Length: 93
Image 1 (cartoon, rainbow, N blue to C red):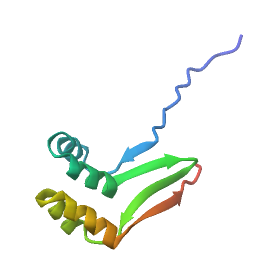
Image 2: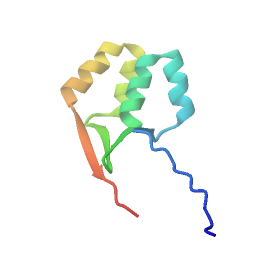
Image 3: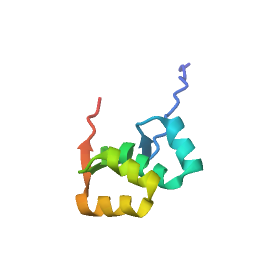
């Protein structure tokens, strides 16, 4: 008679947020443009054993300041300074 083990598989979601989740959820509810900036700063996409994230080339302090004060200036900052898509390979353990 064989012994069966209950093996549970963990679901892997394609999005991951590496910052403070409470601040992200509050900004999502109260002021959506700030949630977009925080998601760009701390968000990670998972696909095919690789992490993809955005890397903003300017100062996040100024970006968040202008997002709170006047959101279109924040969009102009991202366009002028640029944002890169960074890929990191995940190692298998």
